[in-house]
Length: 114
Length: 111
Image 1 (cartoon, rainbow over the protein chains, first blue to last red):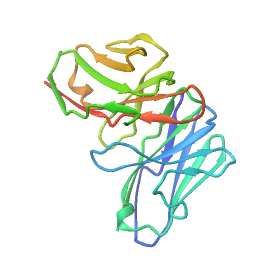
Image 2: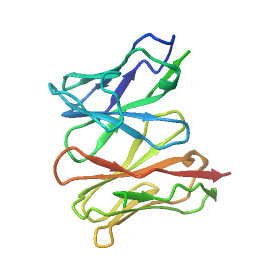
Image 3: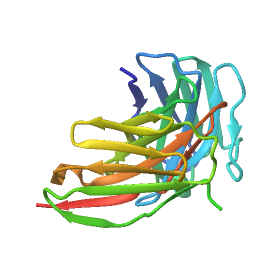
Image 4: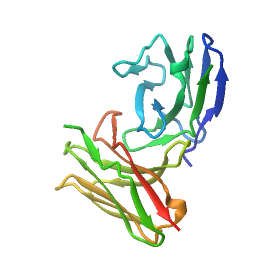
């Protein structure tokens, strides 16, 4: 149990376009979902925390107009990278939680912006 | 002071060795303690989850929490090359939805 999926697993896009990444909790209802960014050989960087039906809480330094997060249901959250630039190229990972006890991570999405 | 401290390594051991990974933390209110394993270019995978103090064993893995010392450990017995990964500790609680992660320890098990 506690499976989280992410789609797509890999995406390549042109500079200036927008990309949407989906995160789904497949077998449980996630009260909270998290979005992380990770550079090669670096630790996870929390971008934002979202609760179903509420606006996401963004970490300091993360542009909320650039990284749009929607948490429409207890099993789905989306991250849209708007007007992507090459510096947005990274590994994006979501996770889902049922409460305070633990987080379950998705497999990640590798974004490359040309 | 960071909430969670973890030695980044890298740690390199021969196959069959016992591996000890550790984290220290500063917030005595933490109640939930987790260890994740992350292979390169993959999302972290939950390995062990412990509530409050004590030991928990699962196969070759043992998680230990010492709340009095604010110290958690993950032991890997009979380490295998497939254990080569980055190991992240994490903790949370008692309320809210904030989790605190260590920076991860890179482990290589040499055949």
